[in-house]
Length: 78
Image 1 (cartoon, rainbow, N blue to C red):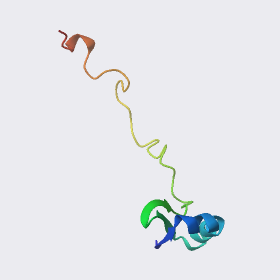
Image 2 (cartoon, rainbow, N blue to C red; image 1 turned 180 degrees about the vertical axis):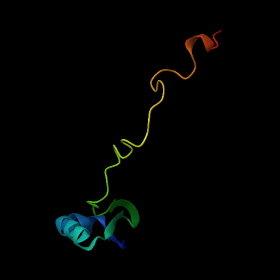
Image 3 (tube, one colour; image 1 turned 90 degrees about the horizontal axis):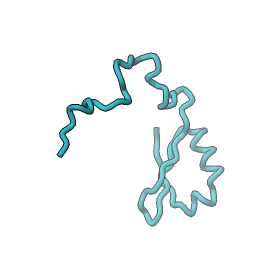
Image 4 (cartoon, rainbow, N blue to C red; image 1 turned 120 degrees about the horizontal axis):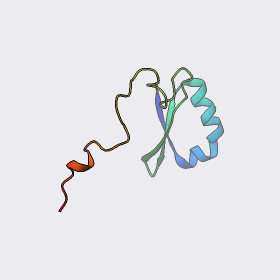
């Protein structure tokens, strides 16, 4: 994937056109302020799954995942 850079002011003026170009060409754009990168606009990959739920059906929970690891009676108290 290619990446090009663009000042924030230019991005502000051409925002919708830039988004269309990112989608059409599958190229990302780094948005800069005073020459320093501050944001990156990337095309969405429709085939890529969302991060949440990616492990659904692939892992098995064993035991209590909410309770403390060490039982209450084993905690040291002063």
